[in-house]
Each structure stands twice: as structure tokens, then as C-alpha cells.
Length: 171
Length: 171
Ligand SMILES: [Zn+2]
Ligand SMILES: [Zn+2]
Image (cartoon, rainbow over all chains, first blue to last red; front, side, top):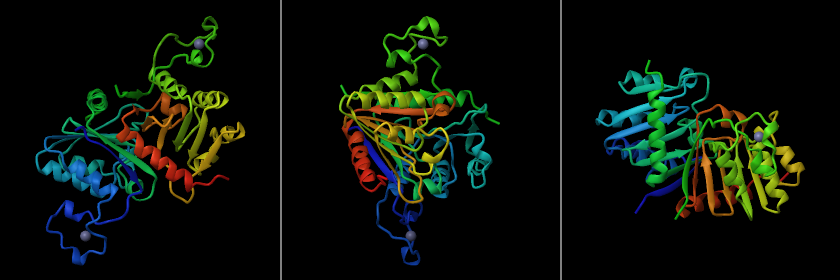
């Protein structure tokens, strides 16, 4: 069966530590545990990558999403991040930290906004929607994230990522 | 077959007058004709509504999208527009013109952004993505619009629209 799922935000606030460290000792943590939220589902979906993760987002400042991408990178998953040029200069942007960690990051060229908010996991699973990868988007805004494996929807995004990647600035 | 389609922006610039007036006399118009673009496909998709159109967008200033919505309203299609409260005050916003035309418009309550950019045609076809309903989004930005009839994707948006509509400000 083809996976199709929609998540809405703002997400409930809950601990997501167990997704990073299974040994997380929840007694010392004040956030709710054992709660599945829109954000934990999104993180889980990203962390499911086993071979590649292509990310094309206007804004990337969310620390948990950053940790997820870093964890995948450390596991050997091939990560490519395409970001908006202007946004990378904003305080809190994790774009430079990603690059500093050895992750391949490119920025859009020209003066137009790279306004996408999508990612493709293992060339197979599309994550797209209105949600920028920021804390405000996750915790405050009304947002949507659509997750699908439907090839008719995934393939155009793979092709567009390739096109944008090729004409972006590797510097 | 379930309809699934992805459009990318910026759109090529071409005349869309024929979508509004079949008698458009193209000899006097300097834009390219007989060209199908991402924007003309989006307009066509919206104009395909026969019974209802539910719109939930952060920003709505694009005049062609406004004309499309107005044309549907004049045909008797039931339109509901849910917009971000702060954005409605921005110059160029068509939210008040929509209301002035007799279209049912509500604004999000509270201080959080209503950041969605989706519409549902005839409770059956979902249009969603990164694209705000502005001229810049259509003509300049790198954006995506996903169009699908897949019930597993459409139904959650219908449900969320209903929920947001009920808790929004009709004033
Ligand atoms: Zn915890
Ligand atoms: Zn023309």
C-alpha cells in the first residue's frame, strides 16, 4: 500500500528525546512522554532515511530537525540541502552549522525566493507542505505537511530538486 | 484514475484571458497565447469547481486568482475563504474585495500565523503547496503546487478546513 499521510501544526509539545537517544531518562524531563505528535511523526519520517535525504527549504533553524539531519549524516545517509540564499544569513539559521558538519549545502542563485518546503527520503518518500523548518512553524503557526509515496507526486519533486541543485551555488 | 499532478513556479508568463473570456481577441494583446503554463493549469483547476471552493491561504493578492474566485461566485459556486488576520491588512490584499463581492470570508483568530496555502475544489480535489496567492509567488519565486484527488490526502484537509472555519472570526 502507498503511504499517504497529512500532519497539521502547531504540534502539541512533547519530548522527542527518545527519537535521538533510546536511553533517554524521562524522570528528569518535564515534557510529556509517550505522546505521538505531528512533530514526532515528522521527525520519525525524516529519521527513517537509510540511503539519502534531499532537503529543499526556505528556512532551516529548528534544532530538532537539525539534530535529525546530523544523526542521519553520521549514519552515512547522503544528505543534500538546498536553501534560500537570503535566509541563510538570518540569525538562528542552521545552514552554516550543517555545512560545518560536512553536509553538502547549496544556496539558490539570483534574487528570487527559494520558497519550497520539501524533502525527499530515499528517493521514494515525499515530505512537503507549508511548514518551514523553524521552531515557530512547528510550535505556533497553523501549517500542513503532506507525506506521500505516490510516484506521480514524488517523481516531479525529485526531478525539480535535481534541476535546482544543478543550477545552484555550491560555494 | 486518481488525478495527481505537480506544478512548479515561477510560471512562464502567458496570457490567461481566454480562461475568463473565450472571445478574448488576442491580436491586441502582447502576451504569448496558446501556451499552457503552471499558472494557467492552476487557474484551470480552480475554475473547474462546480459546487464549492474552500480556500485557506495566508496571502491573497493575485488579481487573476481573485477574478477566478469571483467568476465562480457569480456562477453560484459556494466559496469560503479563510485568511490570515494580519495579512488582510496588507496593501494589495484582495480579502476585503472578496468580502465586498459577497463572498464568505473569515480570518484566523489569535496571534499565530495561518500559514496554509491550500484549497479544496468540490470537496474532492486538493490544491496545496508552498505558493501564496500573490503575484510574486506566481511570477518570481521558486514554488510548488500539488494537485491530488487521493482521498487519504484530501479528506484530512477537508476536516482541518472545517475545524479552522468553525473556530475563526466571521466578523
Ligand atoms: Zn523527555
Ligand atoms: Zn491575450
